[in-house]
Image 1 (cartoon, rainbow, N blue to C red):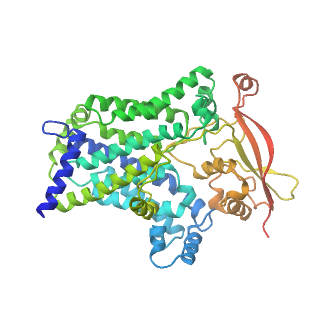
Image 2 (cartoon, rainbow, N blue to C red; image 1 turned 180 degrees about the vertical axis):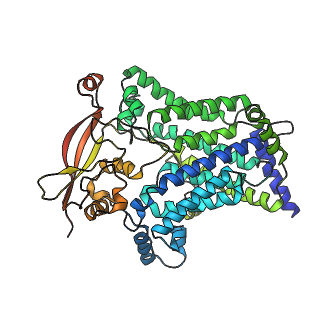
Image 3 (cartoon, one colour; image 1 turned 90 degrees about the vertical axis):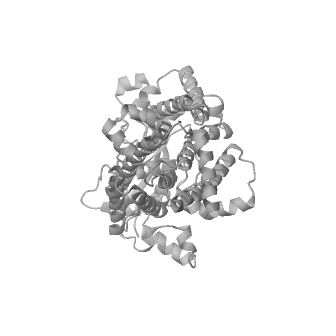
Length: 500
């Protein structure tokens, strides 16, 4: 027991030195309180956003039914390995009621975290529920912000126990913020993509991103030299500012200011749901109690500060062991991103592969390669294969005259996947055929994911998908037509289909 305590203390002392929790230095009790409340809000947004879509995505009458997926896994795996490969509570039951209950429970537990009721237990439940949904949601819940939420959730559990904030947990969350931002810049430099190299990436980004906003149309009008300067600024904010995270207190606050400013610019010109908010939330832990005490109500400061106590040995030991393992695996992920041709030792690769299905130690890096054109899929139905009517999506570009809108922090996951589908061939998008089948069946759950149903009385007999090339209009084109987009028909995306 003495040896365990000595080991825990040694790790804690090292972490305290890095985050400035030396005698007379920084404390993070208020920072912990603010971060956990903010994370609770983000969890609530994530579950509520998913709840309104879950039946249409993976319900029994949805595009990619969870029940069918789990049945296939049962047929192709043996023993307990299926529970590791697909770690989900939906092995018990995966019908529409179970999916709804999981989302409801997520919203409820998130609200309890916000109210500071049993945060440790509720954060464990939230992580388990979101992992369960991500495991059966597959491609619809496979985004970087989904895995970022799971990784943040694990580290938040280490931070959450009552009393003083664990220095190791604080350090690990700083490390996550560093990796998230730094890797996002490094992948652009390592990718070899010509647009990042010649500083023209933002000539394309604002109109080729998945769900542009009306503000992006205006920013796209900026001259080329200005957008090149913005690319250089992107490198500065993603590669330079993260290096300041581990500096002295004033330097950390500069890092926070740069990270928050950059995230706000992204949030102001694109729809990336809760991703920007979660990044900012991680940054809030760079602010220590002395700074928070100046802006929070004094009664709250006194109440939170009074609840300071040391962690009992079992909890401290658990935090230390899990934290050190997480740090090692996370560092290997960072190393592989910075040095993609390196070969980590096999004794580290094996456990990382084993843990991969839990999505809780990840690599990051959005827009590694910039998309330079914008294909869009338009789906049409017909009763006679002669007269066609268009299905309109809620958020993705469709009618060129419709103004691009803000939808964050909600993520319309079908609209996002339509962007990816348009960049690939029909044969390589496995969920697209089931989507067409649900439309031909008139599935109410799937139709609710769309903005309009041109066949309100009966489903169509035929369905086809056309591919168009979209781009933002110029200022002159918009003055003349009032349209935000121009589009040109490329051809058929998929063959005309009908039910047998």
